[in-house]
Structures are given as structure tokens and as C-alpha cells.
Length: 372
Image (cartoon, rainbow, N blue to C red):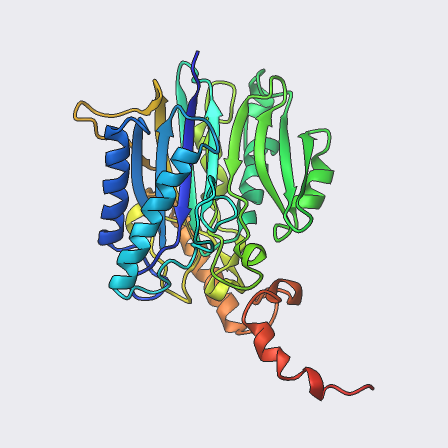
């Protein structure tokens, strides 16, 4: 049986009125490129959307992960969109395109990537999460809740296919190394790592009993690629659900409340994550609060399940009053943090600030310090 690949590739290539939102001309470019690729047989189906100021390309195909043709499609789309952004004098035009020459894979070149190659089940619901003004470790907390916390996921207790637990691949982004840990046996050790999301990020999750791939995230750190602050990492994540995996409702349950992520204004602050529908996927207050959108669809015969006209059937999962509590909490938490101004813990700790423009400010002072 042939496998199906889901690729979610995103890039900040320019925004209207600051780091606010991707305007329609750039979304149209994404739509044009992916429609042509579908007609040419490169991809089977697609969906173009935005998370704040990030252009998001969701593609379903048969080419496998890290395929040069798929990645080149995304790269060329972002390049054309960036040129249009320059023409319109949009803010941050092409800021995530850190390299100039495509080398077969967009990883390490600026865009964020989450991909999974799967064997389709009889029914395969898949959730897409895309964040804006947040760091790569933003999914540590919810992925732990979804796949390791029985207080969140009843299936860990009730479903015989889940009681054996899940395996987590954790990436140490500073040392460029990884480790696989199994829950529930190594739950405490896992938390010891992923509780520091600025360094350790969950990159993949498998079901322990058969190594079925369940979730994958982007792990890009733009500052580590460029050696300086060039923008927020704005992570993306793919999660499979149902039939021996957490139910869709269990996957969404961690977002009933807001929680804190790195990023926000100038990538330099802790901020409360706000789950929003696509219509509210735009950042305003202090370039935020950090936003997260969640889309749901069915993988069907190598494609996104579509209606009779070929239009993909996409669920806008956070466009629901059930998440009003989290949105209210996010605004309240944002107000508390902004009252603190530039004092920690509202601002990120000194080590995280080394890659921001703060280092240039402090550079002026270094020769004025004297021994005590």
C-alpha cells in the first residue's frame, strides 16, 4: 500500500501594517503556485492559509518527507510572494528567507516545516496547528498533555491501544542532538527536559506499541541559523487523532486554557497563547498576543477529503465559543505582563536575549564597567 505524505511549510515573507497579517495578494500567489502544482501532478491536494503574518502551505502528496520537488515548490512560492511583498513595501518582506540559493530542502533556510509520511487508516483525522509570535518549543506543553497526561486524555486509561503509552523524540536545539523517551515510564525525566522549551523541543511522537507516527512539529530556531534576531520562529505541528490515538476533542482540550510561550514582541517576551479561528488570526496588541490556529481535515486516498466541486473540507477548530475562556485569559495575562514593562519575567532571560537587538544596546556599556 502506497504511503501518503502531509507537508506543512510556512514562511514569514511580508505583512500588512507591521507584523500583523498576510494580505490577500500574497495568499493569491500561494494559491496560484499550489493549484499549478496540483494540475501538474506534483501534489494531490492543498490548502493555503495564514497564521498571523506567516503564509502557510498545506500539501498532501505521495513523494515522502524531505522531497526536493515539494520543498522547491514551497521555496519558489515564498520567493515570488516575497518579491510581491517588496513591491508593496510590506513589512518584513522576505525576512524568513535566510539563504538565497535553494539546496534541495528548505530546512535550515528559514521556513518552518512539519511533515509526516503515513499509511492511511480506515479513517484518518489530522489536525494542523500553526502559531504566530511563538517559539519552536510552544508545543511542548500541549503535546505532553495530549499524549502523556491521563487527566487530559481519557484514552490513556480507557483505550487498550493507548495504555502502553507514547514515545517522544526531544531535540536539543543548542547541541543539535536528540533523545527518545517513553511515557509513562520516563514521564518525570521528559518533563525535566521539555519544561525548558527554549532549548528542548518535542519533534515527534509515536505510539509505543507499534511506533505509529502520531505527531510532528517544526523545530526551526531562526536566531541559531542566522546568529542574530531575524524574526519569530512561529512553529507548526501536525497531529493524527482517533482510532487508537487521542480523540480530536482530547487533542484540543489543552487549549481550553491559555499558557505562556516565548516570542511575542520582537521575539523577546513571554506571552499568553490565544487560540483563534482563522478570521481572528492577526496580531495586534504588542504584536500579539501570540496566536494559534487549528484546522482539521480527513486524509482520504492520498488527498484532503473534498466536496463534489473539489474544494477541500477544512474544519476551523478554534472558531468556537468553547475557547472563549482561553481567549479571555490570554488578554488578562497579556495585560498583567505588559504592566511589568521590560522587567523579567515579562521579558525573556538574558541568555535568550543574546540573539536579539538588546545585545547591541548593551555593547555600548561594556567598557564602562569597573571592578568592584
